[in-house]
Amino acid sequence: MTRDDPHALTNGTGRGGTPPGFGVPPGATVPSGPSGTWMQACPGCGSPIAPRAIACAWCMPAFCAPRSKRRAVVLAVFLSFWTWAYTYRQDRKKFWAGLLIAIAGLCVPVTYLGTMAMLAVWCWAIADTVVKPSAWYRSYPGGK
Image (cartoon, rainbow, N blue to C red; front, side, top):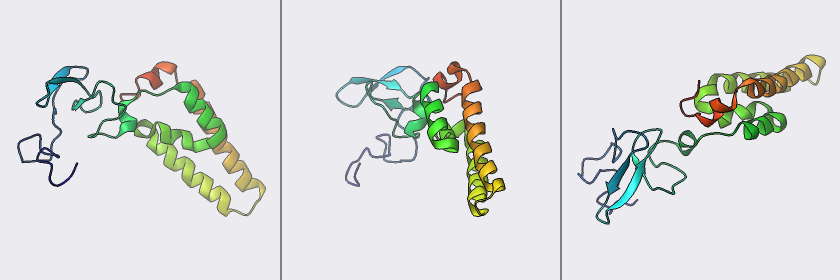
């Protein structure tokens, strides 16, 4: 999108600021543009997206796609609290708590306490992802 594009962020009206199909029910198909191509509604915000699109321009791409429990467990095993960045919309408090505990564990000289704090966060991340049902990850943008 450029400044010269009359439809950039304007919904074709010149006013700007709102997504082109805001208010369209999730999963609906809507005609778009002069070409008349049919587009589907983003499950996150309802704006039209191309049928084969992997991301929505209006809401963050990570919020439009369902998640995989297998991928979350692998992230937890190898990257500890960073697994909560994968489901940040629902797990932001856990992510920030894990980050702060990990930083505190690094700031403490390599002692038993610092090592145990980092190990606890790692175990917490693994346990949290393992106990969540796969359905939670498949319906991720809504979560719960």
